[in-house]
Length: 129
Image: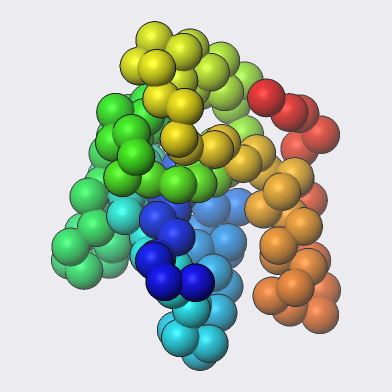
């Protein structure tokens, strides 16, 4: 693959922080062509959000702001667990005519997490988009 896959992580609470930690570890260990281009968390001053910010990754308080990145983000992991955010993301995709980005819900992140560790650290919610 010649280009980087650009990923955004929405929700850096218990689920999102664990996922981000393992995801970054796999990217770095395997020298994967994956870049985290944005994160969103309602507490932009949390240690994990500040860590991303200090590494030059934009941190948004409003998860729907990531939709405006358009073709600059390939996969948006929605780890918020919020039905309201899920609905806002759907609407934002339609309103912005963003036909490039893909929204991956927690259940998909849970699937990936199974490859990160021997034990699953969280269970994705059974909701889709």
